Length: 196
Image 1 (cartoon, helix red, strand yellow):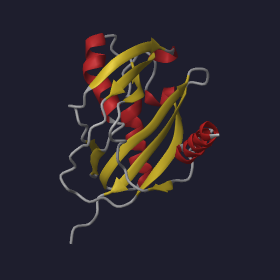
Image 2 (tube, rainbow, N blue to C red):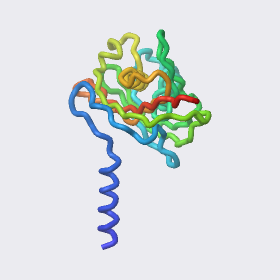
Image 3 (cartoon, one colour):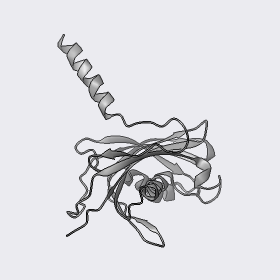
Image 4 (cartoon, one colour):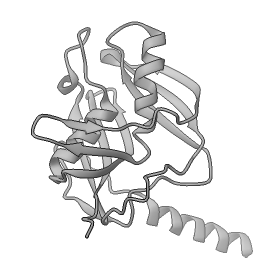
């Protein structure tokens, strides 16, 4: 009897924590999130998607992979008239568990990250919103040529949709459908509170 109660509790908890999924193209309406914060305490197994536009393993794993991993944690940003600036934490420890080559130059790394609390220098942030949307592989650049990377692209797109000029963004999830060539992303964005 106790096992059945524990099992029912686990199933209910799982349903309450699942993010909404969007099956088609475009985007879902945003929904509020309590905090744009990482899951603290336990190691996390994550999928880091990379577009291999160099063929250089060392460059990919030294430049692109750290950004893809850091995107899952709070990333401060600022928007000016000329650019969107993302400040990735490049000191986040992770371990590569496996990697697979998919179609169209897309490579997925399965990585394990130690969850660490990022110091956001005591800045207060308003309640955030979660944005779920999809985008085709082709929107990142042509195959075999220079390409944008999926994780930073997803953060920048959510920031653009949110119209927030300064705050933090965090990639909640990113997946790729190898058949349709479409990425699906869920990103949390919160504005920096106005200091008085």
